[in-house]
Length: 306
Image 1 (cartoon, helix red, strand yellow):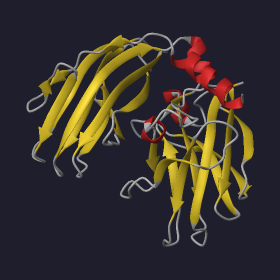
Image 2 (cartoon, rainbow, N blue to C red; image 1 turned 120 degrees about the horizontal axis):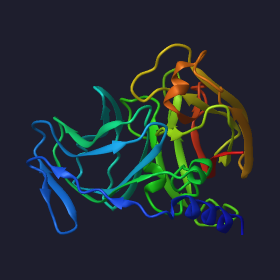
Image 3 (cartoon, rainbow, N blue to C red; image 1 turned 30 degrees about the horizontal axis):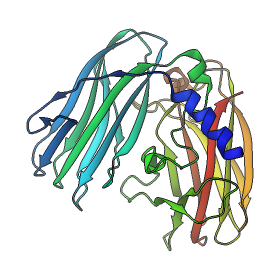
Image 4 (tube, rainbow, N blue to C red; image 1 turned 45 degrees about the vertical axis):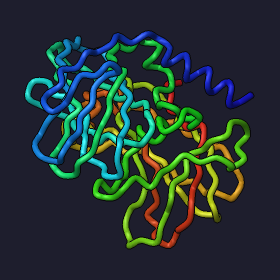
């Protein structure tokens, strides 16, 4: 029942129809009957792109599906560019069609360039389809906008997460057989033997409203008792400036599922934390204890306005 209610809430947040966004394919990208494809040889910069107009004070969502044919993983990024400033977010690729989601907040009314951009390096064949763009309603902004937080919808639950260590592979996979309350799948994070330092994951940027309180909740268990920290970090997508708003809580995980929840209030203005003006936050799961190895499983991750 709990999983069903969670799915209904997510469905309500994503059910508003998004308009198809017809991208402009730069050679050697090709338009196909289903969407777009590229047989990339690893040489040169190329992208799918589209210009859209955004209105000051509005949140927007860009969504698409992608997949990879081959074992190599070319470096592909989602790039938002407005008034000479760009934000970059790595895009994960898998052998099956994977739903992808990213958000943008318009600080001013302007033209925005949306790009799925390839960097020189590894080769591979990439397919993209169902590119769409929509303005979020006030009700949507208040809902849980973390895609597939119950991990029942395939790789979409992994595609919204990034490694805190940008040069390391993502230590995540969606697995079954973990006996969660309902549903079949959970998110598994691997903690290998490693050197000292932080280890963990962060989400792509999620919309926030200044002065509002949010509840960050999740279920988790571990292969052995261990600690984990969850955090909410406000970091401007186009580059951090000034004092960093970073709220962190520590939790003790056991080998059985347990629910964790805490509240965080976003500063009302950007006087002390200038990044608040960008209205975007990242969710973080991490550990600084290199002696903790094994696996952690997550389910029903939610971040919503109270």
